Length: 424
Image (cartoon, rainbow, N blue to C red; front, side, top):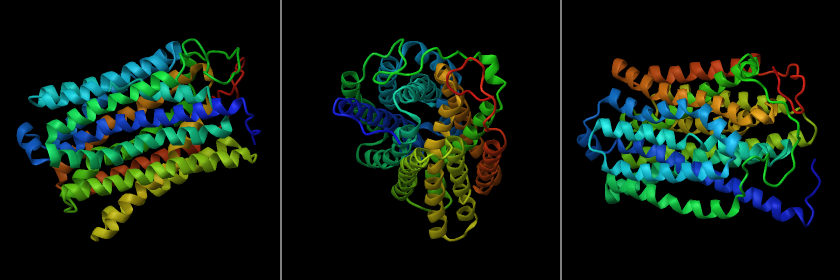
């Protein structure tokens, strides 16, 4: 267990947690800007204006992730080199303005192009946020810090689904994009005031180990740990992005819920996931603080989350609406156990000198899921006329993710010269 913070350390600790909350709020905004389109495509006026079929809906929902995925590794390099403060501020300002500009799109091509640009502007967020946490929190606090940050990516869809429905019904889809985009810009003020310039440093408040050897990219790409993490991340995010881009449509079209009700149940699911993300990170930190092995603890929580997520197939196979809704909420909420811990596991196993690049690689895998899930789901719905095949595909990927963490993400020898662990 860490000793209690002294009087001089408490303001620094308070500021660190305040910055984690700001990072979580940035994630809330980013994911609101991702889910708002998923709600808009259900709106009658929006569908009439753009004339989108299921394949088109899948394509435009995935457009964000094409550019976002490609730029993850360059974004990781940027934050390793320039820190988190300024890249994050620039990124946030640009993506908020692009969200507002969505209101002025005039056809499928311009809508697709703007979503591509949104992916470019948001690429820095995860590498910058996780780099900042990596260098400002110890192993016994990192799970909770990541859990709080990652809760933003779950609260974003939860809040965004309700806010988008409410704004569309009140003001129409165009004003929905304008309000959500421009309103978010207020975040920049506290971020600018609270966060110190961390260019060329390894953290703003805490000293970290020096002399850490930089791990060559070739060596990283030869690591079973990295490949297991990549596969596991893709599988985790496939389910998340299925829910993010198609869950409102599934609840509306396959289960007969209204636009408002489908948004509400999507909110319940992601809110539950946010709560479990924080709880799972905190519980793992507690066990590690009591002396349990960090890798084993975080793997166990990750695998448990994947197993709970697999219960979605029970609801999808049931003819009962209450059963289907129960497991829709339970499965996504349960996956929250994995959220903080699979990211913290990466930080436990990866050299601090390479964390930006590795987060970029990991988030590249997450972004690929954002491309594949909406397109594959749209294609299967068109071909089969139902969501059954898409639900079965979700469970297949969850099983593959469990296998990746069991057989590939394991402690092995440490790279010579590294002063913190990098297992290969």
